[in-house]
Amino acid sequence: MVACVVGTRPEAIKTATVVAALRALPGLETRLISTGQHAALLTRALADFGLAPDVDLALMRPGQEPADVLARGVVAVSDHLRSAPADLVIAQGDTTTVLATALACHYLQTPFAHLEAGLRTGRAYDPFPEEKHRVLADHLADRLYAPTALARRNLVREGIAADSIRVAGNTVVDALKSIAARNPTLPFEPPTPRFILATTHRRENLGAPLERICRALRTLLERDPTLALVLPTHPNPDVRATVEALLAGRPRVLLVEPPAYPAFVALMRAAALVVTDSGGVQEEAPALGAAVVIVRETTERPEALAAPLVRLSGTDVDTIVRDAEALLALRDASNPSPTTSPFGDGHASLRVARDVAARFGLAIPPLPPGVPAEWDAAGDNAG
Ligand code: UDP
Image 1 (cartoon, rainbow, N blue to C red):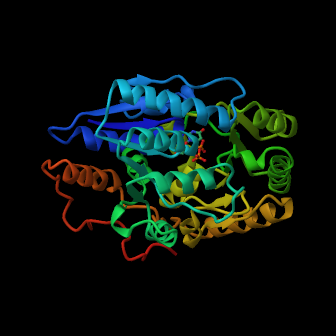
Image 2 (cartoon, rainbow, N blue to C red):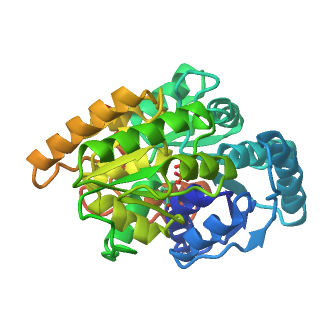
């Protein structure tokens, strides 16, 4: 029995193809557990892949802080695993869920695998609280699925045994490819065909940085009347308050509820520029050839910066405007835009399933011809 634990939308997206690959292994049962940390977005993202949680630990509370989620998560995951033991537990992404799961597994002496291990900025509070959660969870894991060779190097540098790490690629590329193959359509008509797609939700951007991001978006629209803004507003009330105060009701601005994943993929494909502080979007956009301004000071995904149309711009208004205009001009000049996939080749979930099959002595599913056993093992894609 393998248990996969997810807490919010990004993990649901990044774990869905892993669950499917594990369920394709004859002789293995796979249980999908939701901590329900952000229940609505999570359930909808799973449904896009034809999945629903087998167990919902329903941890979400209004105004929850990481300490509450972590404390309640450790208790809920360990209570669940005591009543329904697993031989291996895999968790990905939302780092509070991951750390809670890692600790619960440690107390029960249940093997724990961290999917998307080894992401680092080296700064304790950026991203916060993710950076330290990731370090702690990685040191509790006995199997680490690193997305890239760079992530593997980060782990080895911290003294983690190299033979416990597998460079699988990032499962987000698997998810993206499976959705893009369905050719999803735009969920609505943007105000003009040429538009910026913006998403912001990071804790360290709340308040003044988010205000600066909104001001920069406003300036970009004022300087180019052919440009519109589509901004899916994150459910966090602090994000909503700032975004609505600075952008609602302005010309060519469309604030929308967060679209389902297939619709969001269609928006990323159609956008002239993506402005984001999201981790997942940073990984997806280069694979779609989208131009991206990352509105953060640092990134734990520097592999993206090797892509020709990606800039790490921080949250200074002038820098965002300058970088965004430069990228818009570059993208206008390059048709079709170059696509790069530093984060994977779409076979990460299969690599995880192969490793799990080997652990339990099951038949190992083959890789397609020419696909390497590890992604980017030599670091050729690390930038
Ligand atoms: N996403 C989505 N709809 C949206 C915004 C994002 O489906 O309105 C997807 C996006 O493509 C990516 C994931 O959700 O796969 C990222 O979620 P988010 O930005 O909330 O979290 P992060 O990746 O920063 O943890």
